[in-house]
Image (cartoon, rainbow, N blue to C red; front, side):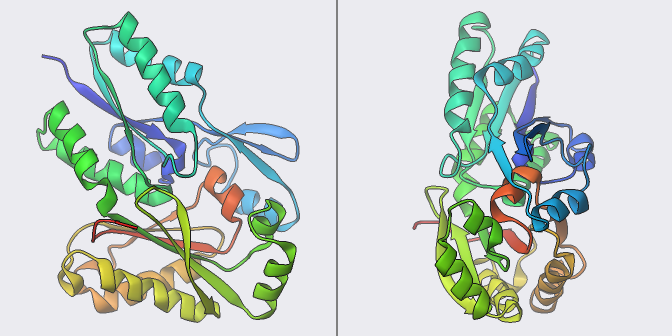
Length: 295
């Protein structure tokens, strides 16, 4: 009887120590900062302070996804060892990596017909993606079969809610995601766009909130509106942030006030270099299990 392994990409935005402890294998995206290509190695070779400091100073960062060949090289040792693989990818709504993973899995099936690489589009990003992996590790450690884990991932991925705000629009402006005029007006009016990830795994602007303080409160309000069980929620909750930990800690504090079981238990992570290349500094993202995303 074969065992199976859980794998994901570095864009799950949890620290390396988490993946090591939970026995989850990670394949790295890449980013190019000021013309130099780096692996998105979970801040092993560069610190969050160095990375976001460079962006604040005006550096440009471009990202690239995992190639078909890299997936193949990543998974093949597991198949040779007799393991099946359950892999969750970064949302297809923001990256083409799912397609590359599927192509690689199909190629390996021809070489290892007795083994299975199941690729699941997480429709998630950052620590919401990582939180799905945490739940899957719990299932695996609790004795769930490969098929049971695959089914859970497909059945529950849209219950992972993502709510976030951006308080520094400079990176979005430089990356062409907002116009220079819109960024200028938003900055002058202290507007923090509040967004979420929809049922197609795409980033959707939901509201323009004036002042970061109000945006922090709005994230918690959105959680209370959608979280499973409301104030009685006892599931997992994580926050990822880019060079604004105090803001993330304030979100966690407010959550603890409104959901007593989570007081002191909300995990706060750094947004990784790939996701951070697009959001820039000043982003706080909140993740929890709740209503299934339908729009």
